[in-house]
Length: 487
Image (cartoon, rainbow, N blue to C red; front, side, top):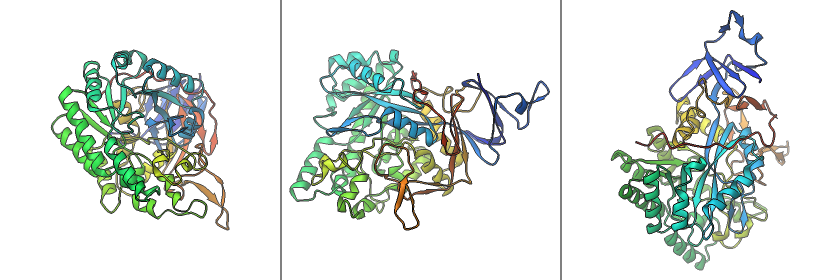
């Protein structure tokens, strides 16, 4: 087994920071030591196989993206990142574990959907991976199958209050599923938007000739998110089920979560980088020579981007500081413009919903440290420690301590990351610099005052100073326990 010593860095946790050296033996962290510590009187650097100099840099636990959609079938196509390409991109960005969503569609068996997702991921992932289970058809068979999910290492399931005819669950179905959640401890994850009402608004906009991508966000008004979030909270309150609301984008939905948490309810929420940085106003103004106003399709996702002028972005950053929102995932669900997003030319309803961000989450959230919106410790908490605790991985993941997996990122605060495309002197793009399987970047032009230098996954260096050293199949399936946040 390879022994690795990371020296000279500042180890950052969710609770503090300290100068320390990190010793990894094989796949596990074995010691966090005072700088320059000696073993049996000998210099440690002389007794290990690999020494990584982290002087002037941060040493943090590997990022955990708890919301990704690799190869998700949607809108007549599927997400463009495979488990191979998507997890490799995650590794480049300092994310060493993902939790993806196995899909059960209406009329299918939960067990068959889960088995298919194992087939897609096994032997293809660059980093460790786990699954949540999408329940797209709540019936007696799926309710029974849900009770066996924990035996499969799956401790959470997702329901949709949106997408009638695809994944939608009505209130009666949600109630029944939440009763299983109450009985088993499984975390209920909820896409909280009023889908039937949204479909009416969307149809009315198209009838009026308002078909550009911007109107996707108009149809999915914040009231639709606030109402559904409140309804999900009340159903969880009635049943006693824990509730985790995904991709929260509206400040009014945050207020509903804060209200429930203030009353002691086991309710949690995540947001995503797009709701902290990208806005409906920018989507409206998006134009290109190739796509015209359809350029805004690059930023079509659900929940949608919100208006910066209405204060959603500032409120979301505030919620991260006050813990009204507990963590940041990506909802990584990439689609290319060619052959995928362009399916919605002339009708925004047909644009596949999704943005690719799995490679950029750690950097984008670190920029929040640079600008003073969150602390260094909160950065680690939001992107690694809380996801591990929320979804039954803490101790093994999300922390640098003896016995934890050797998932470690060396991050250079004096480095720089340009997201999107390098430009030639004449201003034309010289080539793709992100590693996601996409023909564009929603984050093109973003500049980050920091850089992922070295990434270790279970003790193996998989990224080092601009070179990818990992291999297809490095990642292993993560069997998860119950959330460590439940009371």
